[in-house]
Amino acid sequence: MMTTNTPIIILSCPSLSQNIGATARAMLNFGLTHLRLISPRASWLTLDARRMSANAHSILESAQVYETAEAAFADLNVIYATTARPRDMVKEVLSPREAAPEIATHLDQGNRVGIVFGSEKCGLDNETLTLAHKIITIPLNPAFRSLNLAQAVIILAYELFQNAPPMPFSDPLWEKDPLFSSRGELLDFFHHLEEELEKKGYFRTTHKRPLMQRNLRNIFARLPLTAQEVRTLRGVITTLVSPFVRTNRSDKQKKQIDKPL
Amino acid sequence: MMTTNTPIIILSCPSLSQNIGATARAMLNFGLTHLRLISPRASWLTLDARRMSANAHSILESAQVYETAEAAFADLNVIYATTARPRDMVKEVLSPREAAPEIATHLDQGNRVGIVFGSEKCGLDNETLTLAHKIITIPLNPAFRSLNLAQAVIILAYELFQNAPPMPFSDPLWEKDPLFSSRGELLDFFHHLEEELEKKGYFRTTHKRPLMQRNLRNIFARLPLTAQEVRTLRGVITTLVSPFVRTNRSDKQKKQIDKPL
Image 1: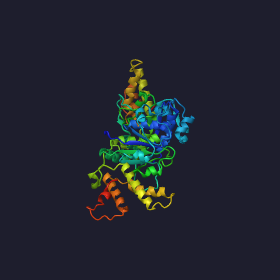
Image 2: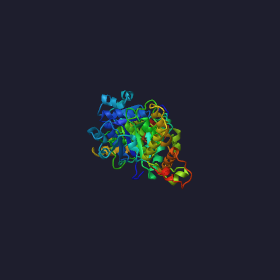
Image 3: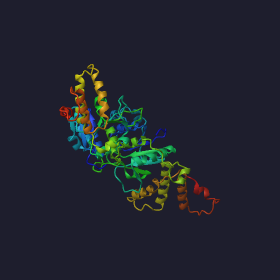
Image 4: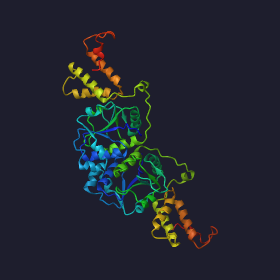
């Protein structure tokens, strides 16, 4: 896979410097150079990290750091989340081998792809997982699933490096605009939707809100939505909450209804 | 690959306890449990090794230790050697993906398969490499080939775990007796051959002997020889050096000539 558009490896809350260093080394072994860290619990520039990176220092030095998954994903078009165990979430699950040609296709079409890995201790939280399009699970010995973080990264990096041929999408609609909306555009839609739902008392109790929000986000997060489709969805919300009745396209409310906000 | 016959991971001169521990963990992640160590430079039972093994302690505790590659390979039928760089040696080179179905076939047919990995600092020495049937090279970023030992092991283990279907051999002769001779039987043949050559002054100077021996061994080491074929080769040597002329099968020298020694 010799394209300048390579996937971005994202570590969520990594807790050991050595693992961040070993991840950088594993990435560079297979030509990946873009590392993002979400709320790291350990420094990625310690002596330990550098030593474990075996001279892949430039990856550590250019790592981008974010406070939240939302911020780390904002400018990316496609997100894959890796988890060891199946979750109770409606989301397609792929093996690394199945994911590789798909990712090659996305990159080929100009999408920016992120692959997010959970922390050593507790994996990925459900909020982060919700924001992914799909899940990647590495098939493991069911009796011993304790996979080291950098080992998980290298298996993905290795598969991506195997010259997986881009895989054509079968959806004819999709071929017209192969570029996904950015996760940031989708998040703006979520915030818009949730704000309007909040006003209408949709989230009945405070403690139910996180689960209701997660289930709702997951419906859209896993779809391959174009930027135009996200704008359409936002138009739908604006229309639904508007006190005006939309009659025809020359109606003077049109502008207010369709404006992307 | 759900067979009780699984490949044996062999580390040649490993120099860091942590790497032996991380190798054990990587093995168990993909259901491999047999570890051999050739002349280890570090202990495989330190706290560091155990910690890095993440509870794959039983692999460390049951690791078998040998002084030489010859001893470690003696009871095995098929040996693959992993190297990062191509060597100046006439030996087939496979990727992990190409090797996996082959290895599945050997295991399926009852062969004991060893996969040997070099040390962190200097890889595999040529003497060890010579004893292998084939070489496995992991395709890597040519600008950064510094692959951690346990990372190399996990990529092989991962590939072997991908349910690679056994691959039928195309050689019809081979189908009759799919069991390879043990490396020990082949080594006995080498020693026999080299001893006879020594007597005839074949190894002209002491300093040339290692290279001449290596080139000679490599001719046979890479062949899929059955135990019967190795016995035949030994018979050939015995015949060649015998002062007697072999006339027919009832000749009284026959026994001396064919005896497997």
